[in-house]
Amino acid sequence: MTKSITTELTFDTLISRIYHSMTLIKKQELNEYGIAPRQLFILHVIHALGTKATAPEVAKAVDREINVISKMVCKLEQDGLIKRTKIKPKSNLLSLELTGKGLQMIKIDTTSKSVQKVLSTIPAGEYQRIEATLTRILNMLDDMRQSAE
Image (cartoon, helix red, strand yellow):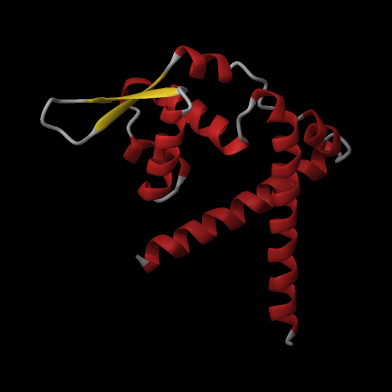
């Protein structure tokens, strides 16, 4: 394997492992509430969008395909966390609104105490450099993806 392939695989694996570990920790912390981290995140997005909350708008806000968000919206509705309402009688477009149960869920502290404990060990200057580098990489990948479309 060439050095560039090895470096890319190592970087990709490292990012994936960090994301996976953080998600598992967040799942454990949210387990007592019976909600997954991704679901709680989507509830926050719906709440932030307010009256503009529709599945396409949520998909756009979180950079996910509409079919992925549609499945999640159905699950959130089944769990009684949101309700879907037709925007116009003859329209297929549905507005999304948090129910009382959904509003209670968004009051849950989404900050993972365990993840914050780990991140707090990184000095402020180093943390800012890591964040700036990752943001730059993400922006470049987004630009590449958009130019390929």
